[in-house]
Image (tube, each protein chain N blue to C red):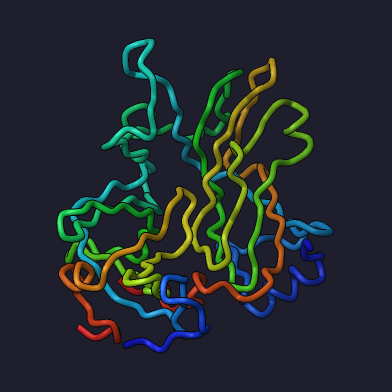
Length: 112
Length: 179
């Protein structure tokens, strides 16, 4: 259980004291069309539910088809997954912990 | 509140604010930093049938695919690229920019270019704290004349601002270089 800061109600967003870095497997990736792309949109499959996020390519590992993510906190029983800011748009989504665990390549303490 | 040239230079000297390649000293104005145009453009032009609507909320719509399918890469030639009125191109800054998590920024146009009708973004000027990479510019010629774009030209300016508290999303280095 991560240490949460704040004493808000159970359904209010509560952030972790430190973001937790993990790696998540993605299903598909769409890179920007420049000859040397810098950003991409990636698609995750979270227990059958598709989630999308824009990410900078420096956090993408195309060999393992994975991307680094930060877990920022919890809202009710859902975890806020976030990525570094990009030019293109949405860089975060909510997911339950079990679905995240299914596609996690690294444990929540960053170990393989 | 926008950072002054004194604060901008201090952030650069401390290597908290990074421009790659480094910006010349005369690119730092009283409260902004000039940015240059990179050599590649994506020229957007419809390839699909006339009359087809773009619905970005449609399931399966992926903006990267849309740009790829409706744009072509144009390397700016030595003589420059002639940008026609009403044309929209996606460009990038030559500089890769790294913002620390205590600084956010806005990218804005240059006044001389603005008076010719050249805008450098379409309502999306925000650069979030912790950002790292080149800035994408949605350049539109809304003036009546063709405008010649040259690689390396000063095309935009970055206005830096403090954020109230360091952004949780900035991560400061925890992602950098990791794959």
